[in-house]
Length: 227
Image 1 (cartoon, one colour):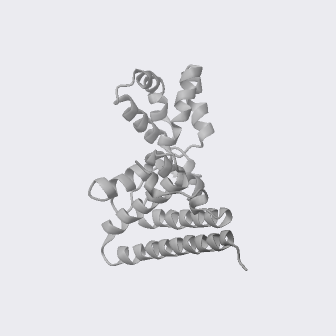
Image 2: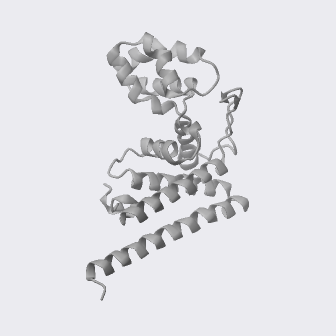
């Protein structure tokens, strides 16, 4: 006879399987939505689904911006998401300066010119560190290193696709980077299908983690825990 604990776990796993089967259907429906001239709606939902999955995967960390970017870097299935665009990094650091931080004002003033003069390509993190290290003090290097994620291709997707889809009037149908390259090829356009592919990959990661651990998202995530 099956024990109560075993029965409860079996029921729990069935519930987890049903949750992700439903999520797969939602993700599949987005393509139909996009192809039926409801492109803005498809982009909004795609962005929100990734947001939700990232929040669940990295719970209890509630930094939704960073979690979205991290989910693309770790599970998007393409090395490009972790690479950094120097100009975009400079723009991101400038936004930190605008918050009124003297610390960031000093750092940005020292490295902005170098970032603006950099080749129009995506750089690895180590390359960016090498580019700015000689311009900063040791303490400033540590501060800058913690925020390099803000210039990654994943962060650009968040800024140009997710924010535009959810808080503005929708992103253009394929944001491009004129003249910028990645590994010798033109940087690909950011469009619905790129982000939707990331969504499918992240769903797969979340499902696998849940199946292996027997816990939703690997840690019994509860959406009601959010403030």
